[in-house]
Image (cartoon, rainbow, N blue to C red; front, side, top):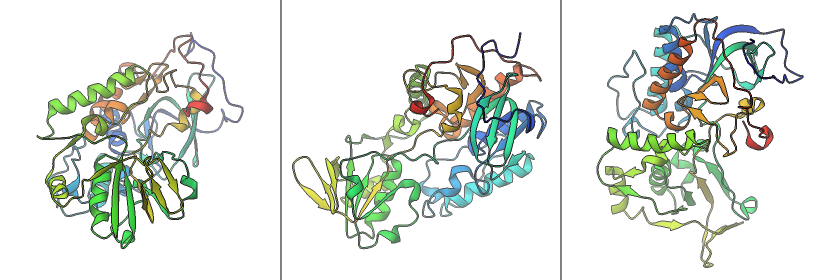
Length: 388
């Protein structure tokens, strides 16, 4: 029996001859990818030939290296230790981008992880022998298994509202934000009810002429503290969606918000006056359904991110519900592929656990990593429509 017991379709532009062979390719070298690399090494996979990490960043740090410079460690909910090397004590006033990038760089060196960068994966295709062709801007690799750890940072979500294209001012996303000074004297609308929205609202309001904070739903801010039980319940809710083949909500969205000293101060200063979503955008600002408006110079969209999975589109992994049906970290439709940092593992502690589970599953298959896919398991879903 071949490595797969279903027919494979090879894209005509896939080069099945050239390329390099590796047992497991890990895409991404953020928290999830580095954790996977650590466990692969511990499981006996040899660097370069047994496993390889392909990362699109210019340097270590994953998405953290792109966080805005004013985000200090004191404002970060927490960066869970990577396996085998704790982060240790850090200066709470240092930028998170610097701290985490330095930490990840030291981690890569200590465990001699085979990270290639900058390498951007463009697509993944089936090969006739049951392996996968990983196409990148730095060449091709052939692999028996794939651990996808691409996260969400490179795919910011921009909702659309009528008239958005007519706005004469500036529109930017959380991913574009660098420093509050660029909003000095401006009238700013901050859109979104998550942690980032509130952090940026706090910074911008200190220098802006006026601000308005709008969300689709009234945010729920709970008393108390983040506890392991609270976290497990949130992860379970996300996991239930993923197991049903639905697109995951973020773990942060599932946990909700807690009253922190920063939020209590913002409430006392009158910054937490939330408005409902506007109905439309005009060249000069935003307008609500009752006809009231706000003349704005800037709209800051703090509206979250979506999983970066477009490179997997040729494999047609999407379920009818729009998500990717998962069993733990393994894709049900294709057991060669594990997704970590996706759905319930989209947190620093969840990424470590998911990486361990994925590597344990791969290691059980032995050095040849022989796979089979149940006939009919691949859904007849348009990759162009689904995006992965």
